Image (cartoon, rainbow, N blue to C red):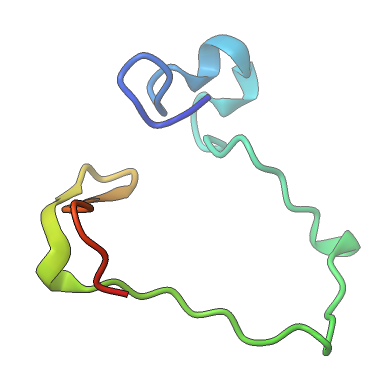
Length: 73
C-alpha cells in the first residue's frame, strides 16, 4: 500500500478488504496493548513553508511537496 494513484487509499481494499468503508487505515493500533514510555522524548514535526511547492488536502490525507534542491535545515 502507499499513497500514489496505483496503490493509494482508493486501492487499499483490493489487498486489505477490511480497509473498505469506515476502517480505511492499514494500521491497527490496539489501545489495550499501548503503554506509556516516560523515557521517550517529545516528538515534533515541522517544515519550512518557504520550501513547500504545493500543499494538497484531498480529504483523506494532506500532501506537501517540497523543493528539495537545497537544504534549509
